[in-house]
Image 1 (spheres, each protein chain N blue to C red):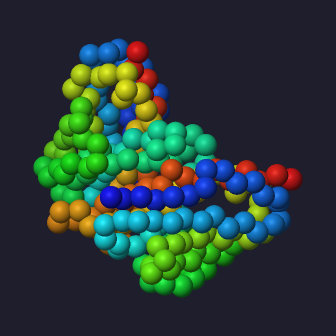
Image 2 (image 1 turned 90 degrees about the vertical axis):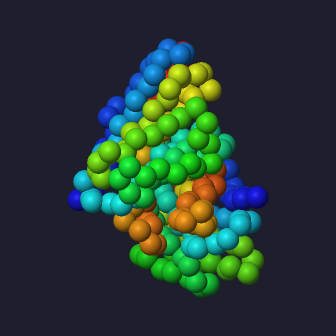
Image 3 (image 1 turned 180 degrees about the vertical axis):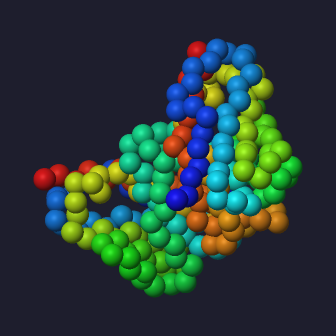
Length: 112
Length: 112
């Protein structure tokens, strides 16, 4: 069964903290994605990666960075968390065309 | 620019049929996806259309008209468990790859 897991379901951090969100997939997928989901705005792409050590900026990369050292793992890093980064963060992976994406359960991050 | 429009909320009765519309204006088009997302859970893939016409999958069907920039998701014989958000997403070219642009989602409430 297809599986995308995220390290935490809920996370509370303070402004200025460095935050790591981890995502692991067990499907040997090439492509991995990080989105944030906010009410009324839908899912917005932060970063994606189509191979190990490769990364591409999405639509809203500011304030974020990513790391993909292994094929199965894609990490999202908030270098200095701010309150406007309070959101639901969703990781997804896909094997390629037509690129049906499989999503993880999400991490609800609150920055105080 | 990229724009995907869906109604914010819809209500329907158990056993009935409901049609959720999605219109899009995007720079490029390489397919349209529908996802279902129950509250607090990950989006799950429902359907994919790349050519004009209707794709049927059990109680769910999805239609695409590329010339009109229009799609709909049709849910028949509604069940209470169909209460969820339905996300329309368009696959568009991005640099040397593709990405999904999501609409804000349509929250469907099925009443007894």
